[in-house]
Figure (cartoon, rainbow, N blue to C red):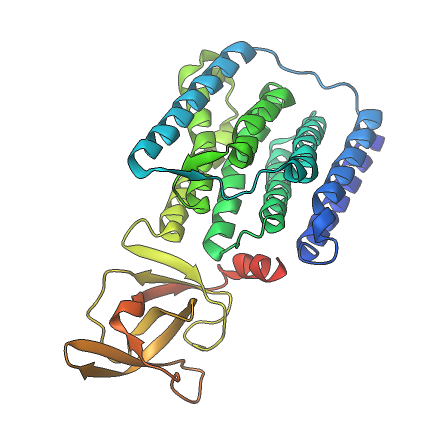
Length: 370
């Protein structure tokens, strides 16, 4: 027993070091080989745990009904998604599918998913509630890095919104994977991952929505499955982990709130601050919330605008009227001179209404690293 505890601790420490290493070297000379490096890491962990831990005691109660429920939800989900294409149109998947892609990306991805869920199952064997929370966080980091690598290898721009959406998706997904693995079998979580994550990369056509919305679609699935597990299964209602339930609902409330702000589907949107030009009002690593519909801009208002395909957040120092058009002179509070060009009304995205300190650092760090 002591040997198993020591092995667990060593694996946790090594995993954290490896994930940090992967994150920092995503854009280095190792980048083309990241998936194979990750596969080797998970394979080694699987071999160590196979040799150290006893066979997993899979809880087989209601497995068949759980599979049927999952398949029903997935069928409904894919039906809705592709019927949506009849309205907005279909387009090719942004990820280029080729034999080389299948061999160098999809094959290692399939194997990584298998070993991740096998290792999750082994580590969840005889765990406490706190350990399950820790493992969920650990695997959230791991699955996020794997997806980042796929997109990075395909030269898809990882914006702050996309990065945050991938992380939020990993949080909700790993809550489901941890629960399915602990309560039933790692094979169930593996099946769900193959039918959702893998399909996101190999479906040749998709409704003409952005990558961020494709991830949002898959992000909502785990929430629905967890809800169905609890609501419509007598066994789950009796055995659903109380601590897990208490954690799940607050996380969902925060998730929905952040999701609405990050995606900008409401009047207000949230973005990370990437520079110190507005110091001391807000600093690099903070996030600002802006109102996209506030067009009554006055001097001293802080606005969000586009310039040369970049998002800038500066204060209005002067308003210039030329005919029927308005232009704004802007300046960063920490800058000695105004910006070199005026901002036209059409380039204004919104007016800043508030900010949260430090919340934007994760997306900025990841974006800079990759």
